[in-house]
Image (cartoon, rainbow, N blue to C red):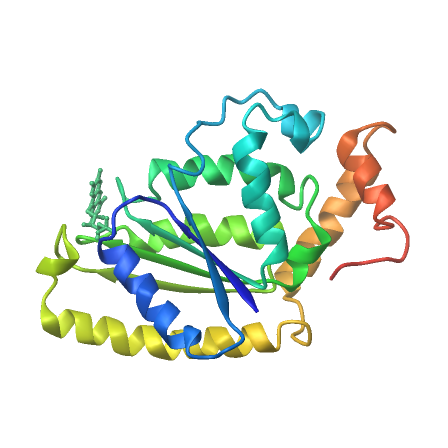
Length: 236
Ligand SMILES: Cc1cc2nc3c(=O)[nH]c(=O)nc-3n(C[C@H](O)[C@H](O)[C@H](O)COP(=O)(O)O)c2cc1C
C-alpha cells in the first residue's frame, strides 16, 4: 500500500512532526510504503492562469515537468496526506500553488477514475487559529477530485517551533493522531469496499449534466465521453 505525503512547507516543524506520528502509526504495518513530496521544492512555479491545462490538456501546462510527476505519484497511491501550516489563516502559498495546478482534475473538469477510491488525510498546525480553514481548503481539493474519504487533524500549538511546543500538548496531539491514523489505515485497507459518499455522487451527477451540454470537441466533454460517463458507466 502506498501513501504519498505532500508537505506544504520545507520546515521540519510542528506540521511535519504531526505527520511523523501518522507515519509511525501506519508505518508499523508492513504493507505501507511512503513517498514524500516537498513544496515548494518539488513545484517551484506559481500557476500563471494560462488555462492550458483546462482548455487544451494537462500536458500543455508550462510547469508539467513538475506537475506530472506529482500527479503520477497521486494516481499510483492508495492514500494521500496533505500537510500545511496555517499562513494568514489558510494554507501556505506553496500548498495553494499545488491546489491551483490540480484544478484540471476536479470533477467540473477531468477527474481521474482512480481518485474515486482514494483516501485522504489533511493535517495542519497553527500558532493559535486557522487550522479549520486550512484543513477545509485541502479537504475541498480532495473532495472535488472525488476522494472516497478524507480525514482531518488540526492543532493550535502555541509556538513557532516544534521544540517549543509544551510536552503536555505534544501528548494530546500524539494520542488524538494515533487514534485517527488507525481509522485512516482501516479505510485504506477497505478502500475498494467502502461506499462512496452522497456528496460525491451528487457532484458527479450535476457535473455530468453540465459537461454533456458542452460543444463537441471540448476537452472535458471528450474526456467524459471517452470514460463512458455519459452512458451507464459511473465511477461512483
Ligand atoms: C507567514 C506565516 C503566517 C502565519 N499565519 C498564522 C495564522 O494565520 N494563524 C496562526 O495561528 N499562526 C500562524 N502562523 C504560525 C504557524 O502557523 C505555526 O507556528 C505553525 O505551527 C508552523 O508550522 P511548522 O512548524 O510546520 O512550520 C504563521 C506563520 C508564518 C510563518
